[in-house]
Length: 514
Image (cartoon, rainbow, N blue to C red):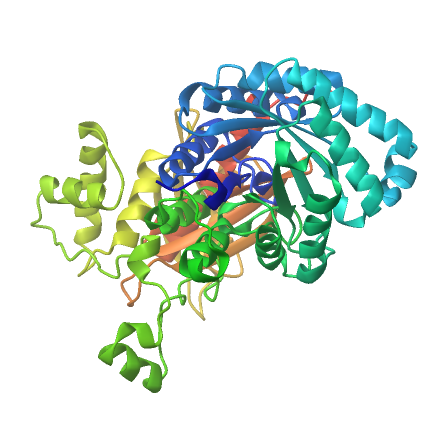
């Protein structure tokens, strides 16, 4: 049996730091689905959110704490006593609750943000950890902007919070500033200088501003860190965070070099990536390591020849090891419901009879217009059919006239609060006309931040998947739609974004934070 010393704990902060990525906000149901997938993936700790930030965030963290039982569930809190109490209230029903509290420690932050002395911050850090430890023995502390903090002062802070009871000390590279060799040296310095360091797990939380988050995290592991804080697809503030999938597969593929492993079931990595993409609308670049569309694609003739003779010539890991089957579903309109249900189960989706029935109806509709149905087609149907929020707006029908000698016109019928409304819109193209019709019918005119189109699979009969990002009152939401007709997919995405905005306006109320 593998000892704890050989394990690197995976602390996933997709639901907290990841959600701070512009356009990545999620509703309560979506956060719970991500949490279930993270449990399936095998992460050790889920940072479920920042409970004091809003009522919505508090309720999401509380629900995750109640329903997700295997991993530890962490709630983030500033050093304020009120923050810590709020975090505890949200996570206290978890099977394994953790309070994660923090305060800035760099002279830059002390001078310009906190306006406090080093002694004052040291006192605040001790008090925060002591209070958290009075609620739970599982407390993590982070000295924010640690990589720009004076090393000896950082040692004093770390030693003090461990003395107060912190069982995990996280060293964040908050602004993505440090280099791998420097970071490895910093971790080694803490291991050497902090007298009680072995009473706590050293964690690292790296940002990707210089593209070094994964490299820095791995350098830290080589020098004594035993927990890595990361996110699916590396999403997060600014340039993002350490990518979970990259750290996991680096440790797994090069166990000969690192000598460590994780408890992750890596065959669930790709599905986790796809789920997050579907929910947030943030696509993965094709050349993204591990989960990008080209990660296991080989075009070079030399590479192809080598792979045919022996896969190890140009593949250092198999697609199957991260959950990419390399196969596709070839079923037609004569295929039965049982075959669809069985294949969805193999893909990792456990649906009840009613959900299978709904998916099967949509499958039949798609099979009438497509020769082959791929796994990605099924996923697009799945997320569009089963995982939509309550809808104020629904598309009934759409007819578009366009061409180089016609004024693009969209005639549309929608259901708005159970009332059927029909109208038409004009634009510079068919999509613009469609969006104009939607705006007229719904009497809305939100700022369109982004419109993107991708093909779910190859071929001219591929489903089109569209992403629409709308802005309201300084916040943005992402809508998604999939259909073989790209104009219909665009309308679905815009309407989905409108429904998400309605949800945001009626369900999330901000709490005043001092």
